[in-house]
Amino acid sequence: MRFLMVDRIYELNSGKSAKGVKNISWDDDFLEEVFPGIPVFSSVIAAEAAAQLVSWIIMEAGDFTLKPVITLVDSYACSGQIMPGDQLELQGEIESFSGESALAHGKALINGHPVVELNHAVCYLYPLEKLDPPDRARMRFRNLYDEGYALSAGKTFHQPQAVQEGKASGKRKTVDMILSCDEPERMQGIKNVTATQDYFNDHFPLMPVLPGVVIIESMVDLSKMLLERVLAGRSMKRPLLSHINKIKFRKSVRPGDQLLVDAKLKNFSLEKSAVTVRAMVSGKNVATATVELELFDEEEYRAKFFKSRN
Image (cartoon, rainbow, N blue to C red):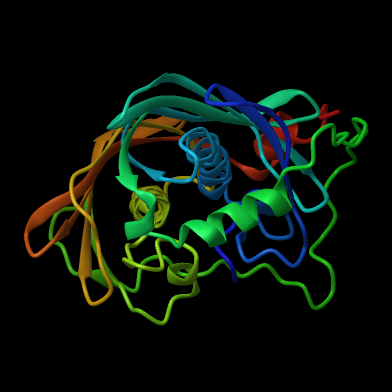
């Protein structure tokens, strides 16, 4: 698995905005199932695709001397589901850009409709040469940028079929261990960070740092597990990510670190719930956020996301 989430950049307004493409395949490593037989692409990773497009805008504008690292996100919104066969249109916009920081926005759309939005992302700008070989970044950009590339025409979407034979989409585990906890509305988990992970080949190879989106994925997944425990015996509904608010990254996570993720139920209903989550290394916060999830049974899920999708 490579940690390269932009397949093509087809429009660039240097230092200001760009548009790109991310194609979703059955071979993708980031498929999961909310309900059996309905494979969907991780909406958190879709946000990473938009963030990587923003990164390319900044690197190109800085003549490949700077690399942005997101430290704060005001809000993340997920309003649709992404499936194999979809072509995501990625859009990135730089609101402000100085020598040390940038403020950016990004989104992913299907057939012109936003499915993921990343709002007010604050980026600290590092010297690129400390994180990634500049010549390699230039080469990748040349391979990605194809001005005037045409998106595929909008397609009428049919009800999702069962997972293809031999293509079960078993989701990779983002939490390695669940710790015992006496509080019914709280859950803690461990994620061990190992240098064998493939994303370190692409994410700052000169200074391996765990991608922030992987931390967020572990926080979202633990929030879902907490809600599933609360729902057990009460409802057949399943939690689905809708928003993440006030994401803040406080320090880097490196290979050899053990990430402790702590999720606590903020409010609960059978329609929508919120969980406050923090991730820690050696007792110190590395990331915090509030995760909002909507609850659906399978009939509600299909009706909202698939029956009228065009």
